Image (cartoon, rainbow, N blue to C red; front, side, top):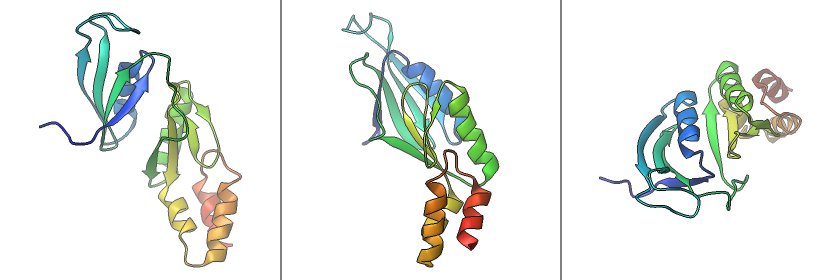
Length: 159
C-alpha cells in the first residue's frame, strides 16, 4: 500500500545519485524503486530515471528529476539528531566532503543544494535548559559555530 504522505524533492537529473548517497550515509535510510520515464519530457528522454523512492532517517521520500527550473533552499531542511561528537562529525563530514558546503549553527548543504541540520541532542537539551541563563549561554555558543562542538556546548551550559 502506498504511503499517504511522502516528501518529494526536486533534482536536476541527480535524484538517483542523491538517494544512493543518503541511503549510504544516514542510519535508517534505504534506496527504493526507480520509475523510468515512459516517454520524453521537457528535461529528459524516455527511459531516463524520472523518480526514485528512498528513505532518509525513517522519512519516506521521492526524488523527482524535474530539471533545472527549481532549486532547493534553506526553507526546507532535514534535521538529524546525533548522539555524540563522533556521529556529528561523521555525518557533517560526509556531506561536506561529497561536494557540500558548510553553513552556521549546525547547518550545511549537500552537493545537490539540499539543507541539513546536523543537531546533537546535547544542543537541543542545552537550549531547553530550564535555567534560561544556561540556555542563553548554549545559544550564544551555537551562534559562533559551523559544525556543532558538543564539548563547547556542554561547557557553555555549565557556565
